[in-house]
Image 1 (cartoon, rainbow over the protein chains, first blue to last red):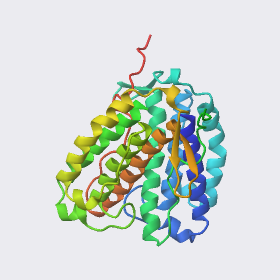
Image 2 (spheres, chains in turn cyan, yellow; image 1 turned 90 degrees about the horizontal axis):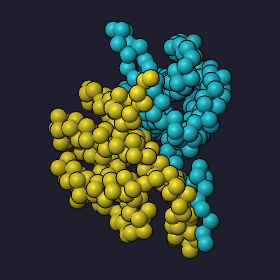
Image 3 (cartoon, each protein chain N blue to C red; image 1 turned 90 degrees about the vertical axis):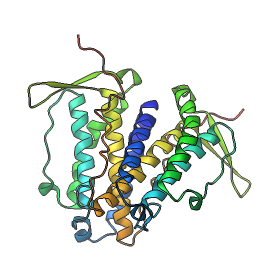
Image 4 (cartoon, chains in turn blue, red; image 1 turned 45 degrees about the horizontal axis):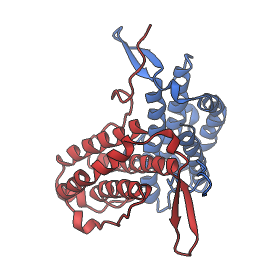
Length: 162
Length: 162
């Protein structure tokens, strides 16, 4: 699980650096699909990751409003603020936590029960999906997207050859 | 690892069903980003997944050519042919295999050594990234994309509440 989160944080930081090379109006421009703009996608990734981790911790979360984070600097600052809590939870994660129940009260009075391991994988897949959308918008801008390769980043060390 | 592959196969099959509702010329139409068309993305996902698993098995793989698989039926048939081998490998996977070395000879005579667990995660992320691209193209076509949600599919069973 740790390797996937490290991958996502690495790729996200590379996209922030990519954003520095693009006029802010392009980052905010309304686009087809995803959350509707490059910055909204990045904001949404940060927001959703933190919100699920808060629920897994049994803490409150709140729906952040993009209007308060409508610049690259603000999204990056939010990420800097929220990531340490996510990181601490991820670092303490082990596979025995996979089936821990997360009880989500529904509006109709029922409850939905998710497995914590399912939520963690959802958070991972959620970012990768929205980054895939960024890659299309990047090409529309005539720019090379960030490589999404997971291999080649030494996220897991291979055993020494005998 | 198994939950992620199950997720990817489920989503891929839902996209095949989505493709049935779209004229084939739209599936083949050249688009910006990704592998350049809806069908090329799906073909590439199948091809890459199988090829990496073959390498992990120490077997030969070959670069399939899209020209031989340029219809939805042909891509689906290729997937039906290749998925059982992938599935068998995934089902036999356990976390102790994470650091198994995969030795890849390079053209310059050097070797690259990857950890098997890194390759498995690469294959998982690879599909999710390319599916994210499909979701943008789907909106461009005015169609609702397949939901990428991983939660809510009972991929991992939560412990019973006390």
